[in-house]
Image (cartoon, rainbow over all chains, first blue to last red; front, side):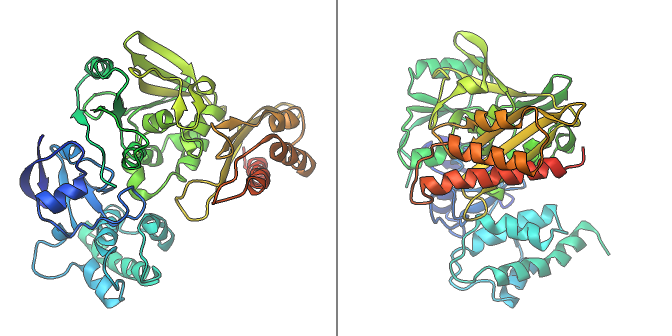
Length: 159
Length: 288
């Protein structure tokens, strides 16, 4: 089946079997390998992408269900050369080691902070409870997210 | 694991969706948010010939609060419930319970109708529907019908729905503003399926005694359960420490859960009592 949607602002189309997940479509058809696949049943969060503004599990959505949608992957968080403030905060706080979970952490936190720039530490902990990291112990990830809030508050128009 | 092969359609009307299900002769399945059914397929617990996606059918995602109660469209997502300010007063038990559903990303796609049709005894929505005496409206090849929640859930992941029937909405009857309620569940990690959970409410009559007690339990049976013996303990009594202790003992005694690698049967029996005790304390201490 042909499916047409936008990824990181660009119109794309792919010819997929209905059983192909959005995550597999992004990786194998569109060659956007930043989206990682861990558990393939909605537990680990590595495949998180942003669909029409909402963070979703890329392995629990079919590519054909993305017809007409606007999808943002980790590659699309920054269309510039440099890192986003959230990515800079991850670097600064050593919020990654092996990096496998990082794309899902970044997309999840980007979706959250875009919508809730004032998210509390408790809220951030709750939200990333759906993303498994086996290296960092989460504390640096939470510190990075708390730090990055300022840039999202600024983007909202706060002084 | 990669999903099995299936055909896929996303019709624009309920009539077309039902026609596709009829043509599928029991092997076609509706899909809503897919947050339970995609894993079910990944684990090969189901290998449908066709998925009939309900996403293009208009009118299924409404939340309506009226005199008869709260009506949730089948495609209402968990986050729609959590974002809805009116529900926090109209039916406070609902958002409190839904906060416990899985994780952030799943709450962005998972739906009310999907959860009811999936009928997982460890999930929140089926138990809330059962506890609140909800009525589920469905439509199929033979027309519309309304199913009481108690008649919908017949086994683990099993409902009384026909293979051509689609859930359209669920009505949770209206709540008096003075109703007392509590919701408690326990899981090893945030967002995991509950090892056990309890939803409870009761009304208080003019002499300060509990009436109309409703207690539902999560994850301690093949279906969502009502704890009728514990309810009987509450009715006609003042909700104090002695009553709560009696209800707790009744609840633990009346459930017969299975043990598994996550928790033994004995542990789950005890846990139901503990959670009911916490829920009733929350209810009793809540300002009406």
